[in-house]
Length: 591
Image 1 (cartoon, one colour):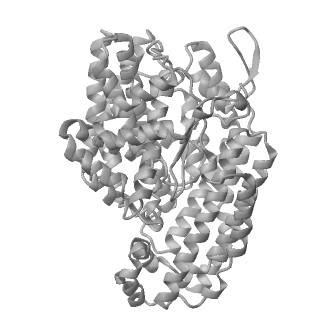
Image 2 (cartoon, one colour; image 1 turned 90 degrees about the horizontal axis):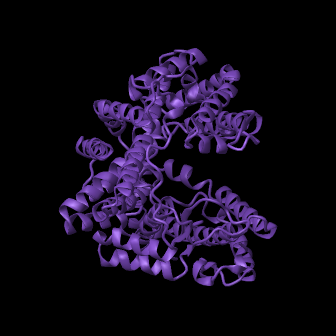
């Protein structure tokens, strides 16, 4: 279907950003003229100069965000349109110029006397920037001399090469061969088709795809191990250079998260592994397998129970499912559905998938490619969770504090999914739908909490070994990974030799200590949703304080506003007990 054939009510209103491409071009010229901050260099010890710098930087930054968002959204409407691809590139070029023009800013502030920085933090005129300044002051002890900082900065491009090398291996050089489809046709095995095959019901094709896919990584096991070891050694060098106790402390310090959160996660998941093993055993029973293999782990247990709702009915169900969050929340959902926040249907050339985006001072936007499936109903709830988190934060915080960290970015979206799922479970007698949703929930927790925690533990071990001087050879990494796989998945599955090499295909490992945030995100979301359903309006009020908090404090402190303390055990226990209770309910329906 072509975009012109879609009713305007199903399209987002990009004109709310700029009325036309010509208006965008005028703004681009204005922004280009404004990217000059040289007058401030060397003057930021003066509080009035610093205030003016912040305000001017924000003004230009917001212009650039509007320019990029407009071009980006127009591009995603039809990725074939070269005009908007070019406009995206122009906007990114301005961001590079902006970054270069303001590069002096943080080093100049960090170099100031500690008492001056403390006076800035205490200054009421700088209250919008107090959290940023506190973080800057905290990092001061890890900043080196100007000459040393210059040397480290010169190595910036070198540090990123490990990720770039792996990306080239993974996306450009690896070939997985061909595989046979249901009708006997041959097609190329790729990252995308591999994921689809692992979820289909044809077991022999899953086995063949699994073996072919991993064989490509095994052929390059020593090369990939060397690249990953280089990436970890880079982390070790930078952590030591900046006087951190460990790579983990350095990585989490940048997010303002205590290392106890990481430790709590791994310890709590270890304690609950018997429930995970029980689920793996149940999968084997339902699939009627004498031997369950790792290529069976995504095989469907329940026939799809599609809700097959029109978009309007799906939106109505989402609003009902989230009504526990109050009239104001549901009113915003309705406003978003009706007032041009959402681009609904798939059209020729449109970007696939779904996302939420937005900028300060304007309502958020959501891209969908809606189909009449249960999955897509949950996608609406998920993306609107992101959108309303952005809406509340932008409404309540100044520009400098509105943007929330990645650590909490998936919390609101997952809260919505959990609340909707529990609403449907409570309001339907259809056993097929109930089994489908319970299995959906179990696999959501398995893949987002247990699996990502296993990844996080692997990263922690790899970095600890490197810090202790242990070479990260392919054999060593495979043994570490296989031991973890056996620990997490238990004895009712065959730990195929190929699975020992799974570490070699995970791109996120090149952004060290990132994956644990998926696990803490779902733990926080489940705990918040359960608190809302059990405590009512008081918990809803606390949750909205969190939604409205943006990036005004550390993510751990912000979650405390919603009643979740990740430095303690309760939230972890709540989420992991949820898995066990859901599993028991699912078992009772399976019979």
